[in-house]
Length: 122
Image (cartoon, rainbow, N blue to C red; front, side, top):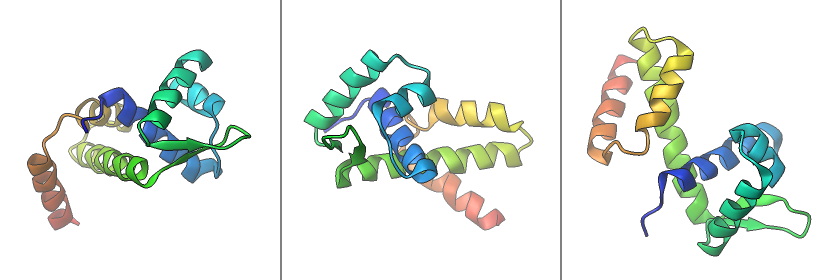
């Protein structure tokens, strides 16, 4: 199943928030992404219907294995690309913004080549 960039961003945000705070609710996602609560509610419903997240009776959100796989992949791309751009001399804010723009569209082949190159530099 093809997943849209916006869904990848939501899943990545859930992963980041979970790592930082240990728990995630829709309001946390809305605050982090600077979106309205109703927009997040609609998105969370779609992610839940597609099997990427689960929500308990108290509103806490967890990633399913498939949601975690997508979020982890996008987050790895984001961190590696940001670090790569910073190593090239780009300031961190711009590097993170640029990484966010291309992390979704970069082919697996190109990402793996960049990753291999970065690993050789370490």
